[in-house]
Image: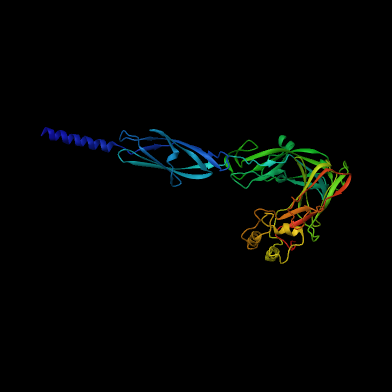
Length: 433
């Protein structure tokens, strides 16, 4: 009888112990979002410590981690009772589920969200200096709001200083431009909306220090802003200069130089091409003009009449002048039914820039006409060859590398002419407008 009582008491004790055992507990401290590391994959390292407590059993509990619904066993580290969840994750929000099971089979889980934010500033490659001339302001007005009528002026976009855009995790990247003196004296606080500056007659023959900023679109609360506050876009800036070298027609600046460079950009059918950026470069300094309706450009009063490189550039509206008829003409040339009569036609027909006229060029042209692509992947919309260049083998313009810029070791005093022939890629019959 006593033995039965003892056994009954022991069973009751076991049941009481079972009732007192609680489910596993997971304790998580508060944590901030994690910053991206700035690598090309736009990943950020997350590191979340947590602790686990269990009442049942002496063995370490089983842990499972799920990130965005996928198991992540490699992200768990540590030993009972202190663990850490860590790993590299893409910029954005992520859902983490931590699940613990003790040796009694009891399970607990915690679900939380963590965020990886882009804290890396854009890192473009910059030009150091931009040399420019003022242009006539017709009619003369006060273009910069200083109360003075400006007979000549020029606008400079911040993007003129960008040599290479580089990579960024949260685009698009925008650029702003500011006078360094105004930043230092507190009259100008940099902001992404100031994309250009206007220079006028008061800036004649001046070298003006500038800061050019690159801003991404992250807008997270962990970015330090130029005014010392936190929050907003990531940014970086570059110290540059604008060199104002007179005005084109001597309206308000005294002439200091007598070297000029100009010309026209036309197709082989003598049709002027507007909107062409003509870049005049020396070392790390460049001056840019854009051709008007007459296809003309003109650089006057050049401060450096030596070691100059002149390069036209236009890469917009690839479909301009390109039709199925151009594909027919390329096919006739390949079949030797109607061969091309000009080296410029060969260049126009080489749509994929392989230096060979083939069926692949027709395929690429058709994809553009059908709207499957809107640019030629391996080519620009326009190519430009100096008008004074003679192709050694007209039926093979790639027999030698044909020039696409003019280089001047030393300009003579006066006006030097440098015309270019414009070639619209894909437009074999010259119908581009």
